[in-house]
Length: 304
Image (cartoon, rainbow, N blue to C red; front, side, top):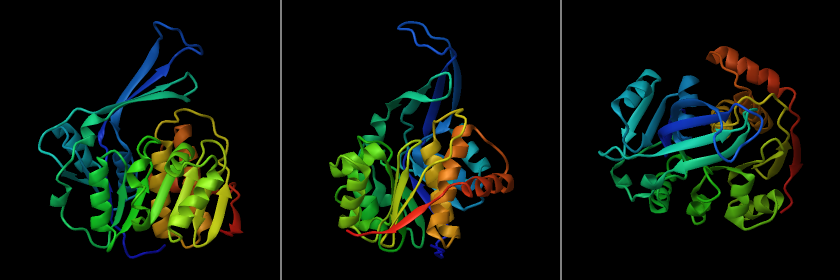
C-alpha cells in the first residue's frame, strides 16, 4: 500500500450494457412490461470509469469500439488502446426484478475469446494493472506473465465460469478479488473459508477479497484474516456493484495505510452503488467515509 505506482491500466471488457427492469412484482411466462436502459459496461470499463472519475490516470485496453464510445472515453479522461482493428459485437444484458435485484445476466461475449495479439501491447512499468477474465485464457496468462515483474497485478473474477483461466497464475498475482461462487469454482472447495485457505496456501503474498452479496466479506493481507458485513441499503440496482467495489478497493489500497480501512471503504462503495447514489468526487468520497464508519471489520491472525 502507498506504492509509487499511481497509474492504472485496466484490461478486459468494454461493451454495451442493457438493463431490463420488470415493472411488476411478479413474472409471467410471456409478456412482461419493463423499463430499459443502455450504457457502456464491461468489468474493465466499469473499473476504469470509476478510477477516472476519482481523477486517477487510467488506461483501458479492450477490443475496438465505435467512434462515439471512443469520444465518451476521451471525455471521461480514459486513455483507450485497442487490441483489434475490427469492431466485434458483444454485449451484456441484466434482468432485474421491480426492486432492482438481479434475476439473471445474459452475456454475449464469444468475441472476447478470440486469441488476440497482446504481445503488441507496449511494455508497462510501475503500473497498477487490473485484468478481468473475459479475454482468452492464453491472452490472460500471457499478460500476467509479461507484466508481473515490474507492476502490481490485480485480477477481478468476472464470472464463476471463467476463473479457471488463472489457476496456473496465482503465484504471479498481487491482488485477487472474487465473489463466493468464483472462489469455490477456482478451488473446488465447499465454503469461502476453505477456498480462502486454499488460495493462501498457493500464494501467501496475495491480497485476497471474497465477497458474498449482502453477507460477510472475507479478506486476507499480510498473514491476517479480515471480515466485515456490508451495510443494509435500499436496493435500486445491484448491477455493477462488484466492479465499483473493486475499483475503490484498488483506489484505497493506493491511498491508505490501514488495510481494515481499505476494506471497509470499498465495501461501503459497493453498497453505495447498489443504492443508486451519485454525486461529484468530493461528496462521493465523503459519503463513503461516513458509511464506512458503521462497518465493523474483524481481524484475526491467519493460522494456516
